[in-house]
Length: 121
Image (cartoon, rainbow, N blue to C red):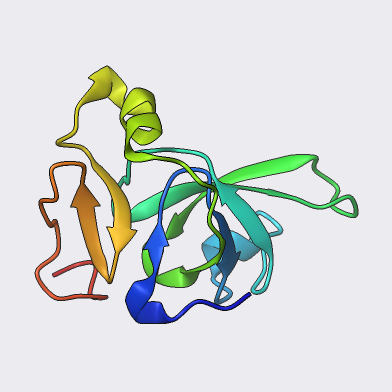
């Protein structure tokens, strides 16, 4: 199932696909097209912590920080804002925790980036 980029929300427990190869991913045997699961509720350095698994990989599971712009939503994991808040350190709604319509948002609705889809703005 493909999603319209303008309607995309990426958050805790969503399945995501890696959109590009990069040395930091490839060195961990993670390659373009692989699907993983966002396992960290908070966004760190404009990245999500994603776990990848593949029965054919030498390593069992690989957890790696992936840049937001290198990910595409595959399947909504169904995590509610309450579930995300419960998983955030100290249950702090000020922590940046999801991406919606190109903006990094916390649970207060505050935006981290000024320009949509430019996660470093």
